[in-house]
Image 1 (tube, rainbow, N blue to C red):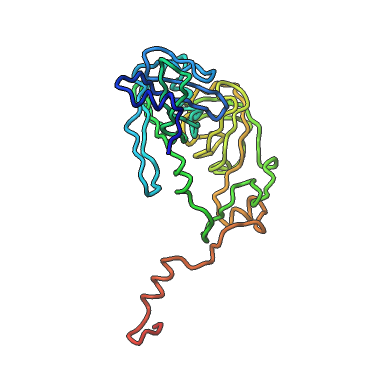
Image 2: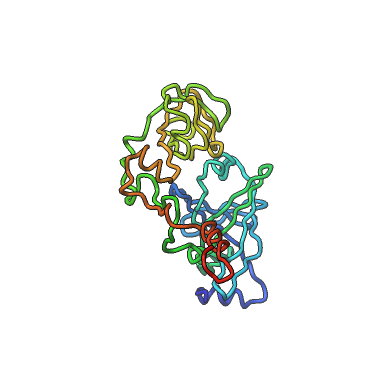
Length: 287
């Protein structure tokens, strides 16, 4: 049930309404942005909601079976607010969003919240973006608890892994650029694959403060999982963390951390069970 003020409720009940939809986005870095489908900007609760042509949501769909709400927001990138570089850099990943309706002729009537959640997948096509809005029920679809697995379930360096990342982190400077996803650093003389699956954290340049997973590493060359949102320049500095493929062998030989290994590689898998079942003879015994 939505709670609204008596004044706004009376306005809804009237024959003529002056309503506008507003979007309040709070990015992961704390920046607040406001947008509205009204033909003029609206200042509500101290935040200016810019009027943007083409910034529209799809129909809000909510069900009584606690399934995840279905809603997308579409809009156009533009330099003063939402840029393509910031979207690609991940600044809007998991940003908090609130969609509400106000009476633009009398903002003192308050608002009616339509949807509250976070942004999910964002796609960009020719200066237009489409963002998935995940409702609060999204949290209920997350897996809680653990099952056994042959690979380690800990994250390198977390409280369960306990590896000291300082000993596996190298500070480096970009010496050569292939594109916005591939570059070299002469200080990285480690063996091929040493940083594969690791992470790059930029400490200067256009991407300062951003992080990205390493897809491949060999011969001083780093290939990122995705291109960085902003251009990489020669001289940019970064910290790169060694990668872990979650296997028992790597935990032992690379990190000397087998005591904290969080996998069960010796538990028989489905293939083993099916193989055993296929060897039973007609009496039901293993043949």
